[in-house]
Image (tube, rainbow, N blue to C red; front, side, top):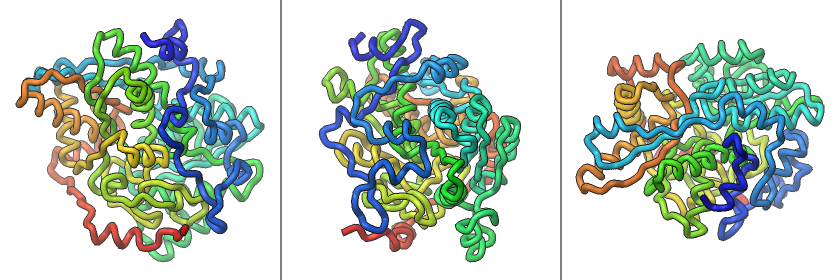
Length: 453
């Protein structure tokens, strides 16, 4: 095992540090800009929303950031998460490929999201914050932050995208069980929500709208802070516990991945899995193909523009350089609610522009077919989001069947789908519709991108 990997794992196999990929990139990502002056923003611009410890992590160029012992103590409830070889799926596909999946569904919230929710709640509690606001799509992030806030005595208020609020009532019940208050977004509780409802009373909502509502509420009260479940650097930093564990586990299995695939919405699950492997690739110790998989109805990497844009619909955030479909874009109400975001993580967007990763888009019917195939072979029903990665992994494995190659394929099963069964019910009944985003729709959605030069 490489010394850098040894450095990051303790005797109980838990990572001791998060890994910051920025330190090893050929060039740093472009900075956030002030929406009025278009000048790079400093830490003070983020202070109304985030505690200083997280702001420091957002802008750090250090390669490793130590994980506080209080956070590691909570991680021990489910980490290290298991890495499985999908032997029964391999047999069902009749492929020579070796398929591995890192299973994050063992966490208390059933997804990878607590990996960042716990440190975010911890750092806010350390600075005396008593309440956090946030948005959530499918509900995995809202569930994770509700869980984390309950551990550190912080109140949690969640705006859940309306489409998912209606489709996934058990996610709301989980959040409320952990002590959070939950509102459908757009709501009449905020100016940004009321503005959307005035123009579109039946709006299905979007993550951009929900972010606007949560940010608006946090910015109005100095005792309240905001927490984000994806996109930003510090969130992806926290998720690297996934890839660090997977590196060590793959070595224990005596295998090196040839292809790594992960689903991408905002980018936290994908970055968490692949960044430690990208470090090894950049150092010349391995050379996997790294593939991001996004929904065809919300394809920010494959159809979006690399440009400065707001992270929310109302334009309350700094401008971020990212692959975007436009901050006013409202995706179709697909069942992979966690992937319905108009933009991609600035860090992943930058890495994509550097040519270090590739991206594909998949329609939801192909993804649910892959989820059913996986469930019937491996016995785990995946959340709709990771079925996108499974679809790409199965596609790769079937290609190996044709060529006879014995490729090693690694993916992250970032959550279970036990609270997403109505979505599977619609698929099994033949009621799902594939939404393809036309070039005309993309152009219309990006018509109001901010002009920064």
